[in-house]
Image 1 (cartoon, one colour):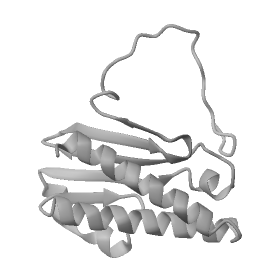
Image 2 (cartoon, one colour):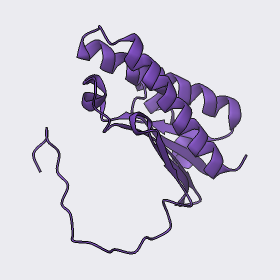
Image 3 (cartoon, helix red, strand yellow):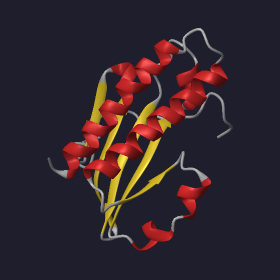
Length: 150
């Protein structure tokens, strides 16, 4: 399996796990749902990357203080950069589908693989598809957060 396939597979599987967490915590508070989603997706991605590419480093948005303090990734040739649950607030609101899992690989000073899973939309976008420029054929769109000021 190459790095593109690995990024897509991990993002998709973490997304599937998050759909299960969302169902399991449907009767829980939004705060409990957020916490469970963040933790379980992070733990899954860290364990799988450690198992599948043990020589690579990982930078996760949900890293613990101990994980962040590990200086190994600063000089590593290959660093996986993950956001186990992007859109935690949206994830916690049942029925929302605008949240994602991001998995990317930085190697030798550049991005070499990446995937974005949109589990509630049953979609995973991955390189090389993401990296290929697409022709612009419509009016410009401005996207802003509904919960954060621009």
